[in-house]
Image (cartoon, rainbow, N blue to C red; front, side, top):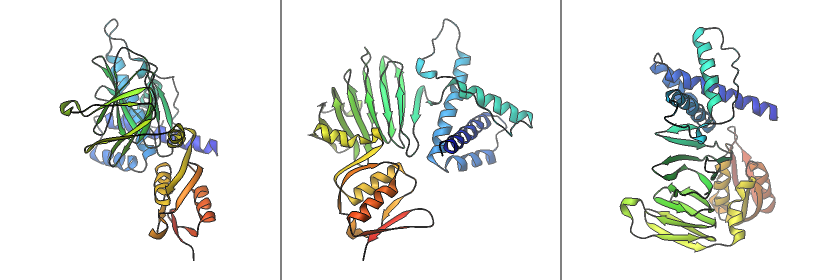
Length: 331
């Protein structure tokens, strides 16, 4: 199974690398671009793979443009070398050129650049730890994306989607995190989690302290969060409350590949599982949505979760032709 999964991921990486090089070619047609858009929209895995390989391609251009004694490459731009083999693409000069270029691109790195920033992303069900050049750490949860920019004496990270844990290393430069309407400055050695929600950014401080402000142009009131505090910050303002260590651990159980439920409703639990899996769970009977649940479950095992629910409650499950699981009241 691991070999099959690895082969599939390698095939996706290879396809992404080929698309990067093709799109960069002047002869790329509108039909080619439409075909690429269709391929990328097939899954978040395709999107994330394309971002990684596009980053390699862009960074290759940046490295070529550097001149000795003028600029030193950022350590975040470099990653261990990897080799790419593309069987079946050696019949034409164009294909051989694409394969060679893609191989060079992959050798540079596995992330994408945006306007001077570096993006890191995860697909659905994937987790990833990124260590930056200053030794700060970012741990990305499922289907998440950040853009990192080090410029003008500031370390800036923007959470574009999803959820991440940030650990700010000691450095003379401020460490800023942007998410929705919130701008946060973390103290050295701070460990904090940020999750984008429909009502704004949820911020939980596990260690250290964080100054939470609105965007610079609208700074009116400043909120300083210390360890053991969580806050929701949105366009309507902010609200905070104290949380216990055990509550924080449950909220961050995803770092160990788990979902920890402690009184959440079935509706909330289903929404959480759907963040991590392509096999969707739906509640077809609203009368069961308020059932309260507790327990630890693996994020990528929705069927085990469903089995526990149907064993503990008068709930039955059925699987549709599309693989989706529907929950209804039994009897």
